[in-house]
Amino acid sequence: MGMFDEMKDKAEELAKDHPDQVNEGLDKAGDFVNEKTGDKFGDQIEQGEDFARERLGGQGGDDNQDNNQ
Image 1 (cartoon, rainbow, N blue to C red):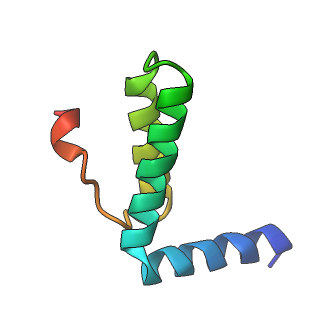
Image 2 (cartoon, helix red, strand yellow; image 1 turned 90 degrees about the vertical axis):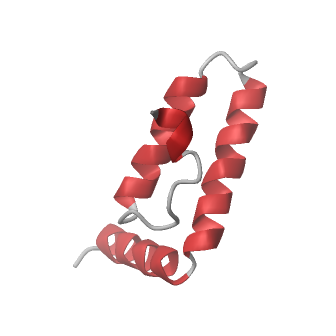
């Protein structure tokens, strides 16, 4: 197993152990980027947050799920 595979596995393990913190971090990062871009790319930022959650095995839930429907 390569170094990056080990890092990925460790990140996934940490995300599974701390889903609330992962979700909060993704939300804060998305809010920060959205603010810095003048709210011009809200939909794309939401998609990025969702993608990150999926890549982490769906950990952390999606508090913004109602906004995506």
